Image 1: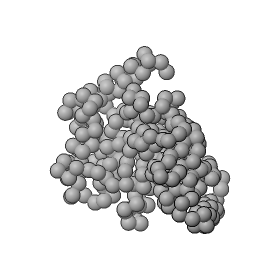
Image 2: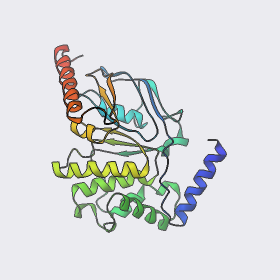
Image 3: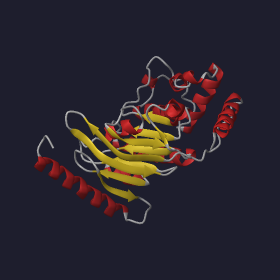
Image 4: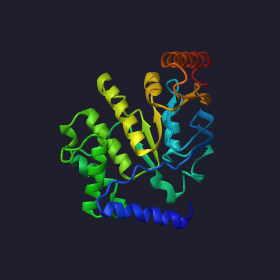
Length: 278
């Protein structure tokens, strides 16, 4: 797609917003490539991690505690620089490429909603830099809140809704900029078991409905197997990709969970045997 095509695409999208129309179910065209990414602090944390996600993949990052899953997610999103290696979206570097900064939306572990703003205003806030009029921001916020299952709650404040509903609003906020890549950092970790299962189902629905490419960090193997299409198992620190699994239903779910649990325990034992500085 050339520059002219990009301008036409943006123009069509702005026209849809001006007329209050929902965007069509988009075909996610972004390809994510992580090539030999490493990250050092006082010690190496990530060592030469490489994987690729095709358009529309739901990638889950797994691994033992302390292996750098969240750090890797931050690098993928351009929030934090890698010490070495490269991350690209559609062939463009994530960091220092301002033309593509809007392609990434992030849902954090905490919802990070502003308590003095309604859910509508919280979602609309991320649209302010795009120069949309207030009515356009509100219409877009309402559309994505409805997509996230919050139709009718647009005027509620965060303190008046449940934790699961706040996370839905956080997902709506991340989607409102129409990113091609959505990053999710253990977004359901603070929810009880029932709400966590509900949100797993909901995020799968939203993924199918929007076609977004998602990279999702979780400590729960069961959660990863339930929602992910591609599972990236990281080794203990300094992490590498131990296993890359296509979760296409060909492997029985219970067996896959058992195999991944075994891998996690092997990595934990390896880390303990190597000592704290490893």
